[in-house]
Length: 295
Image (cartoon, rainbow, N blue to C red; front, side, top):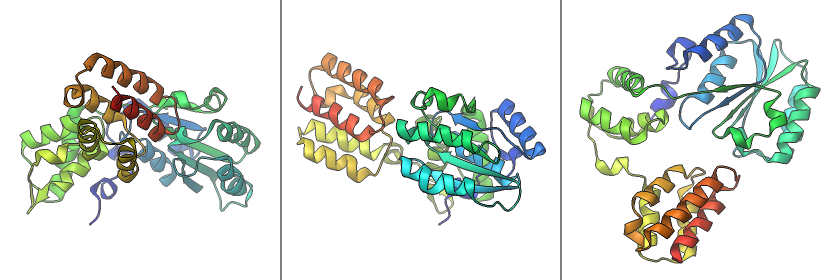
C-alpha cells in the first residue's frame, strides 16, 4: 500500500500549501538555478522536508540527503559530506539536505559550520529542524533562516478533500474536522490517520485511531505503578524519537495516576522545558516518568 503522504507529496511549488512569502523566495531560487544555505525550522509535519526536496527537484544539482536523526555525529560529516563536496560533480551546484538537523551534536555542528565555509564555492546546504534553539549560533549565521508555519485548518481540510476525491474515498465533514483537530498542525499525521481509517471506500472514524497508543500505555503504566524498567521498555518499543504529545496527555490526566496534582504538574512543566534543549529525548522523558512514579 502506497502511503498517501508520499504519493501526494507536492512535486511542484504550486501544489505546496501555505507559506506564500517563502514560496516566492524559493520560486526565485529555482528560477535562478542557485540557492543560499538555508535553514527551515518549524513544528513537525508542516512540510519542511517537502520544501527542501522541491528545491532540489527543480534545480540542476548533485544531491546528498542525510537524515540527521540517524546520522548525527562528526563521522557523518567526515565520511559522507566532505567526500561528496570534494568529488567531481555532474553539473550544477551540489546540495546537501540535512533533515532533522537539530539532532546533530553540538561538536558535529561546529565541524559542519567549518565544512560549509571550506566548500562555499561549490556546495550549498539545506537544513531542517523542529527546534531552532538547538542549532548553534555560528551555524545559524551561515544560513538564511526561514520559519515554516503550518497552513490554516481550512487549507489542510481542502488538501485532504482533494486527496480523498482522487482516491474515490468518502469522508464526511464531521470526521474530517475531528481528525484535523486531533492532529493539527501535523499535516502528515492527519493524512496518515485518514488513510488508515478507510474501510470500503469510506472513512470510518474510530475514536481509538485518534488516541496516541504510546500515551495510553504510559498513563496505564503510571496508574498501575509499574516498574521504571517496564516504562522504559514501552518507550523503547514505541520506536518514537519525539514525545511532545506525551506532556499534554500527562497534564490532562494527572488524576488518573496520582492524587498530588500540583506536584505532578510542576514535574511535567520542568521536564517539558528541559525537553526543548536536550538531544536524547527518551532519557529526559524517562527521568520525568521516574519522578512521577515516585510521587
